[in-house]
Image (cartoon, rainbow, N blue to C red):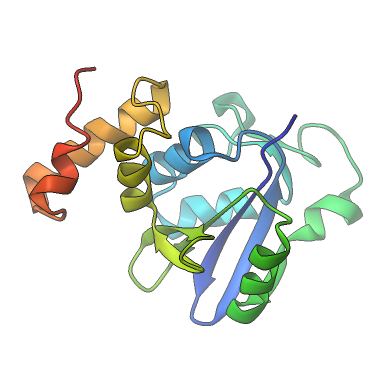
Length: 175
């Protein structure tokens, strides 16, 4: 069974995005995007591949990313040109119909990742969603990429004091 996700970049009111078939949850795609796709260039490289089977630590196939056209030889017309250009209103419609299990978007205005939170009906900072899911015990802090994200968040907190003390304390787990 797959966990479908949408991965995109928001530039102003326009959204450029692709579909990813496998491992779309926070523990995999969410943490990978947060940790390894931290610039517009890296995200554009990923999105320009078109629809994906799965993502890895980089857009190259030797880093685990499998693109339908590049790596599986599937029809270019059906996949390579499937990069959708949407507006924010259309994004909200996609969320409502439940076509994707998870949706992740990088905003160029502040260079931060966001995740669509269905309960709040809005985009929320990805790192806060990761912290929240760990705090609510719905995300296992011992999984590989989750553990990497926790270590990174702890480092960022020490360096920049971005998060409330009680939020970061919840991810200071014994790993």
